[in-house]
Image 1 (cartoon, rainbow, N blue to C red):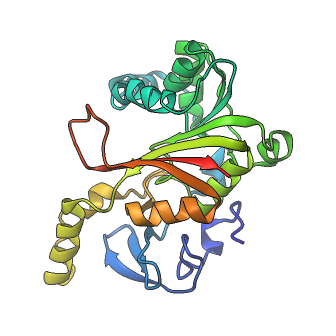
Image 2 (image 1 turned 90 degrees about the vertical axis):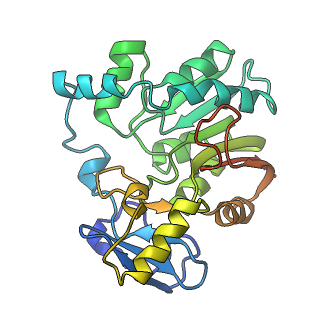
Image 3 (image 1 turned 180 degrees about the vertical axis):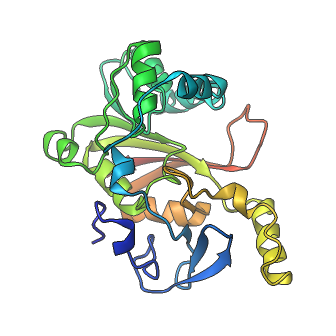
Length: 276
């Protein structure tokens, strides 16, 4: 099993982060990082992990510059939250249910859950976002990641609902993150997520152009990944993520490529699973 608290230099990127086999090879060199591709399962991921310091040690605090940055982007994905709530409500009555929003951002979705009667908690690794959520919305978000002993020892089989909106592409080890989240679900509990899709035409065209130009042109590939702290480290196909759900004991109850009112239709993977 991969130890999720390791330093970046300790990980062998030839080991696929999805299937675990020593079968990954560097395929796309994008200057400050390399995309690896698993020859066994075709999973694509960066040769980058977040350092321990980026997970809560010596993190910056909210100041005028970071506050302005957050406020300039506060509505970036907020328009999706009502659709996400409606999606969740199709499958679960939230009244008096226990919910956990992983990667809560500024806590806006947690507020919607609470307004609908849920007892909701949120996890957010970014210190400045936690501070802003407290300042703006009065929400106390947790800093400890879902695989931390705080959650694993104190909240096993505790939650009726766990959500990860635009999160799984950011984490160091997606299989272990989902596995940790599922341990916190009650039997019959629900896990919902969305994430960018690798099935889109822009990704496929970028791969083809990279090969045809012998690596001189990468087109849109740099838009899918980021070497910044908490940036995009992997991009899934729907088949890969659906398979991971099933491997980890989730019955898939819904899957789609976009929300009904999303202007960029077909660019996402939207999945709902029920714990067996």
